[in-house]
View 1: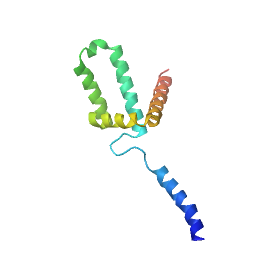
View 2 (view 1 turned 180 degrees about the horizontal axis):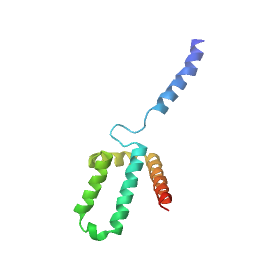
View 3 (view 1 turned 135 degrees about the vertical axis):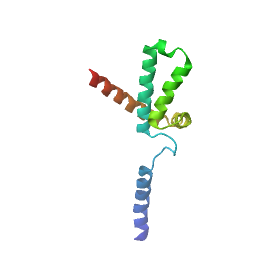
View 4 (view 1 turned 30 degrees about the horizontal axis):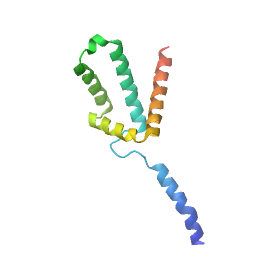
Length: 112
């Protein structure tokens, strides 16, 4: 009887444990955090593209980028580490990117 219970509860316990664990290691932005960051980076890039006279040199672009990092409470190193991790976990990156697209579309619809 114990042997049968072990075959039932062990796989169930492992499944629950694996499902509850985050796949991303510590220091890597979660999917939703990455999506929010992507939104702000895309908006900043669009602003730069539409106001080139305000961003003639890289230092002004860097200031904008650093303000985005500050808003999200991260550093350039946090961002770089997250990008490296997401580059090796493309499904998770696509999930974050799709969330970002949905958020941008919602903002666009709200403005119209």
